Amino acid sequence: MTHLTWGLQGKTVIVTGGAGAIGRAVCEGFAEAGARVAVVDLSQEACDRTAADLGEGHAGFAANLREVSRLPDLVARIESTLGLPTVLVNVAGIILRNPDLLAVTEAEWDAQHDVNLKALFFLCQAFAARLVATGTPGSIVNYSSQGWMSGGFGGSVVYNATKGAVTTMTRGMARSWAARGIRVNGVAPGLVETPMLVNADTTPEQVAALEASIPLGRLGQPADHVGATVFLASDMAAYMTGAMVNVSGGFLMY
Ligand SMILES: NC(=O)c1ccc[n+]([C@@H]2O[C@H](COP(=O)([O-])OP(=O)(O)OC[C@H]3O[C@@H](n4cnc5c(N)ncnc54)[C@H](O)[C@@H]3O)[C@@H](O)[C@H]2O)c1
Image (cartoon, rainbow, N blue to C red; front, side, top):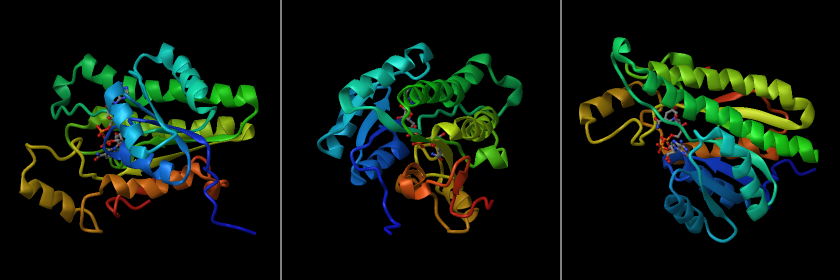
């Protein structure tokens, strides 16, 4: 018996936020495993560039995921170009930091919930609907954050609420769709060196303080998330569903 088989060769994999920092690395991982990658992000140019960099057989699909009524059409466009998608990886997310809870606006609340939670739910729905209609098994990987568990840092309270909901919903979807052969798991990054966390305003002292809080002694890199994501989507995780995998260098341990 062969144990170590990804089972991803020739499969169509959707990666949202695929032109972003972590999303792009995740796309590369699926391409390496032999999948056809549908790169979904806001800009067609960025999607096309990422898909072209992956090599032959991949394609870019621009979409504003907040427009949830258009998500079934997005899945249909991907299916007609690359074949029925059987893996969905929801990486797209936004954070709008506001350290003063008394000043959080409805627009900030809505934008983060729309992208991180509402769009994720309705894309899972559109994706799963095609699997159910065709009797095809599949898998979903949802991106949460260490903040679902820690509550996060000042300024990210609303963002972390969305990520808590993503974790809860991952478990609910896993239960709901298990009998359909659809596994649903998640990845919770810790502190990752991307513009979402470290930007021109971040001082070396702040970076050093973040690193000191991580037992493995460094910030996460986009590439650190590829193994867990591809694994969860693959046949090697065939008996895993409802898991939220902690990829934080030991920042949190659960
Ligand atoms: N960077 C971190 O420290 C960190 C920590 C924990 C969790 N995460 C999570 O990891 C995921 C990826 O983060 P990242 O650091 O790569 O961020 P990123 O900003 O580099 O990538 C996010 C991508 O999502 C896309 N996106 C945003 N809104 C969209 C919309 N409405 N429609 C389509 N695409 C949209 C963006 O264009 C971007 O390319 C996110 O879900 C984030 O919440 C990141």
